[in-house]
Image (tube, rainbow, N blue to C red):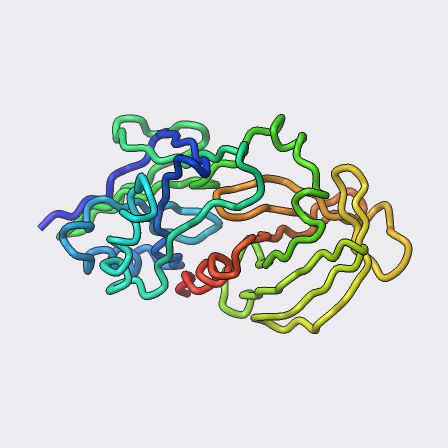
Amino acid sequence: MKFEIKSILIFVLFISYLNSSIVIKLGSYSNKDNIKRELLKLDNTIKNSNSIIFEDNLYRAYSKVFDNEIDAKAKLELYRKVFNDAYIMHTTNNNKQIKHNIVINKNPTIKKIENIDKEKVINKEDILTVQHSSKIIKPINTNTLNSIKLTKLLIGRTLYFAPNKITKNSQKMLIKISFEKGGIVNYTPIMGKFPPLSMRYYIEGEKLYITRSTPNPYQFIKLEEIFFEYYLLSKYSMGKKISMLRYYTNQENAQAYLNSFRF
């Protein structure tokens, strides 16, 4: 029996609150054969409609794109019979005008596009095409991003942050972070070794400063991109990017993201 995961090209879906398209994140694996083996266990009705992305040195499996959450929920339990932590990826609830792009490609004749390479792995019983990509989900364009104010995204909000790149279980961390209107930010650990903490925060233009005293102009946090279900912010020190964090608006999405890793 041959099993084929459709290869990926450029298929752009614009996501909005009034007309959402949704994907199910199945899991992230460090071993290509393991994720392939798990996909073969899926029910025949959903076995041949999934995508694998090689991203940040991990193989990530996604379902097909659904037109609405009702259709995605109808298939979710089938996926969870194999991928226990599969979850529906929801949009961030920041601004109804923000549109997101999901990049999925189904034309096997193009070998490279926008720095995306494909790798074919052929075994006796199945054929697997793996997409090499820096992102399955593209951010909004830079011009739109520059018009978004950090004050609107953060002040008075409760978010949940996790590392952007995880390569082993010990790196999993989830922190609840609350930006009070009075300029105090509170950190509450949910997963990982991180003490409860309260700090001062300041926002100047595109830069976020979090400190115990006077802000250091050479150490700040900056919004990099807004993706389908999280904000990506980077910490800078002396002009260099030193870390990247995902800020989720929904704790369930953040927890599901961490649970989906298999090392």
